[in-house]
Length: 247
Image (cartoon, rainbow, N blue to C red; front, side, top):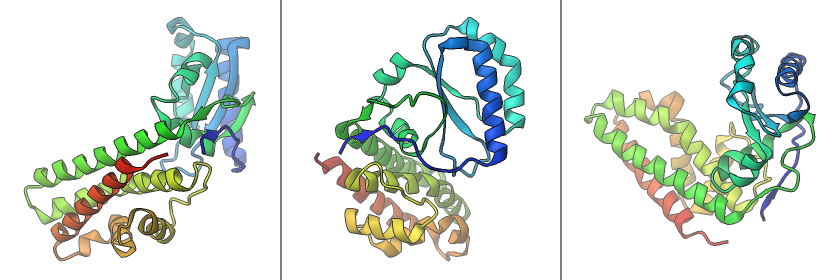
């Protein structure tokens, strides 16, 4: 079930294509024939920036200096600073950043050169370990965050709202762990995520829906501390599931 390289079919808008063409031109001027590949990924992110990875045969700090004055132009074109890696670095860190690379593999669109993920894979054991780290970190964050609220209802509501994207990502990655990494998950579909999480992990779907909708409606909850208590218990259950998951 290891995740192999594949290029997503997500379309690029004319504005995105123009921005990416400009980025490739900038990187080609800096690295010449050493620029091997450029991919865009996470095209459905809502932060407004277009994220890219550029694979370079080799480079040094001196190669980066000509790019310094270009960063402001990238920001104007809603381009995040590209993730620059050598081929060796990419191959040697798949096990270090399995979720990050795995999601790039699942969502990327090839912009220039050869697919950098061809022949590479994220192993099941690495993906499971990444999910466990993500789930446990989320649980610890909720526990610490609860103490930091000092019991204030408004701060508890704020903690729940702020934590929703991370919880959604935890669940999506565990669903992929169980059902295959190439699975296309609509992170906006709370109903489907809740149903899948309930079936796989055993957390009640109604509770998952309530948490995921918290970004919009938690302020109307009479006592958000009760929801947070159930949320923390659910996060404990999520961590236990992935901790015991076996390939």
